[in-house]
Length: 258
Length: 321
Ligand SMILES: Cc1cc2nc3c(=O)[nH]c(=O)nc-3n(C[C@H](O)[C@H](O)[C@H](O)COP(=O)(O)OP(=O)(O)OC[C@H]3O[C@@H](n4cnc5c(N)ncnc54)[C@H](O)[C@@H]3O)c2cc1C
Ligand SMILES: Cc1cc2nc3c(=O)[nH]c(=O)nc-3n(C[C@H](O)[C@H](O)[C@H](O)COP(=O)(O)OP(=O)(O)OC[C@H]3O[C@@H](n4cnc5c(N)ncnc54)[C@H](O)[C@@H]3O)c2cc1C
Image 1 (cartoon, rainbow over the protein chains, first blue to last red):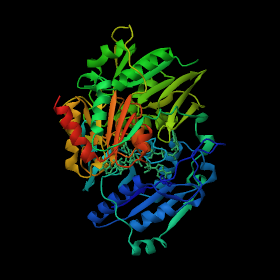
Image 2 (image 1 turned 45 degrees about the vertical axis):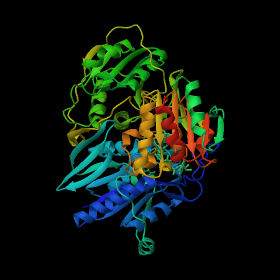
Image 3 (image 1 turned 60 degrees about the vertical axis):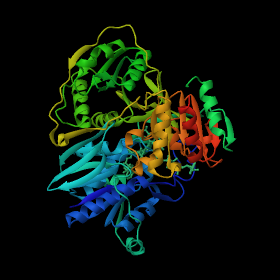
Image 4 (image 1 turned 180 degrees about the vertical axis):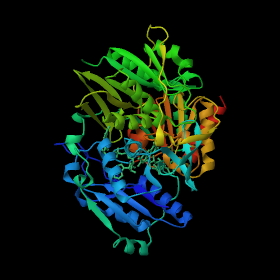
């Protein structure tokens, strides 16, 4: 079984985010890392291929400046190869363009039984890319998977819902978006990290994939204003010395909650 | 031109229109023009409510017969648009169904989607939408530059719902066309988690617990306190991912947006992704042992202390009343 995993490489979320004042888009300059949200998809794919006993996990990513550090992390976890789409013309792409590019990259890799993405990325979190990709590829999809199994050409998913979960089945090939917590991602081993250095990463441009228009030209949206949100006024902070709960009771009384 | 024809993706739960649906209809009405609701499922039960909130027309696909709403809803909408009713704007709630449908529809129409919005304004023939970023510290306003139909998804609780004075909406059938391969996914079983007490996103009081509780058993303190205050228990993602509590309790960017009159955060650090889900609460009480925890930045009353000391005493004091 062959699985393709979408892997987004993002600025370290531990660092405060910043918008570029000239373009009003997220600054993506420094080193990028594997979006933690995608580590679940990578792990899920590795487990599925392992269980099937044949096939491999391939990665696709769109990122600026030929960035591969996040891809290397996923390769070190055990993925076999990757396609990276990197192209200055892709700067400023909207989610729809991203989905078109990733769909074309998936096609380039050839027939996969499953394409896995996260339900949403940590930096842009539109949550639209996976379902858009499925539509571009004319594929069925199951979003918000909290467990995934593949049996004889059918993917079975427990799909999280507002009220609980649904059991959903779908013939492969299909696209599945997975939630955080679907599986426990492994840490790359030293051996894995060394092996990842020589695994193939093919770098292509949007034009190589036949996707146009891209970037600013492709996005039918324009940021017109960035403003500071009104801050909440700071409240009263007290140290508990054994009686702080009374302060809460008093506060709730004041609000007539009790 | 202008924005004359607005659709709202409308949802039903237990025979009633969801709060998010009514919020969007109310906002759509205020933007002017005609408003239609689009129900992916059977819209008959809620047509009168949808009408009351402003939908002159209620498109209804009828029962989905096990199809997931994404592919089915987008195809049904596209068929109506191809049939000649071309909306200038379609409003979706930023939730599971809304996201899946708007994504597929954006490809069918080749239109961008603006997501996670909390405000919308007509701007000539276009629209301006506003999105909070970086945990709500900054507000980004974006316009659509291409042609409609404009597609926009809004965070729940962005608008105050209020009924108008119109009667029931006219129900118009909008069947799901043949989906081909995209309709491959079928629901085979539905599991509903039992809940008691008020719903998390409708409760007047929310008591939420985080990793600072230390262990899953300690969540009982959160539940007892919520019960005493006739509120709903909530959680940070950290303890949902750890499997202590079900996802339906998660508050934040990827969970529920809550705006209760009182939000009590126990052992929650206040990560930006958590704060976007609760910052709109009228009063916030935080209990955290770290005086530097970001949650104190939004708290009206902050207790620097151990949840295992403060919570039991608080519960006892309230039980004694
Ligand atoms: C704060 C902010 C708000 C934005 N708002 C919008 C908006 O409203 N509308 C819009 O069209 N664009 C928006 N963008 C731009 C958008 O984030 C980018 O187009 C991005 O390339 C794709 O969207 P996403 O990260 O939101 O994807 P999501 O749909 O959230 O991503 C889901 C999953 O798809 C896969 N995936 C997504 N992108 C890639 C990638 N580059 N490489 C590999 N896998 C990937 C990953 O598995 C990811 O977890 C916004 C960006 C920022 C920073
Ligand atoms: C894409 C994305 C989406 C996300 N969506 C969400 C979301 O929807 N909701 C959400 O909540 N998170 C979300 N997160 C995760 C978020 O970034 C944080 O990791 C999470 O909110 C942390 O949960 P926490 O506050 O319980 O845990 P921690 O950050 O570990 O905080 C625990 C707190 O407890 C305090 N503490 C410890 N012991 C005690 C004690 N004995 N008494 C009192 N206090 C104590 C500590 O001082 C600390 O402040 C998201 C992250 C990403 C990347």
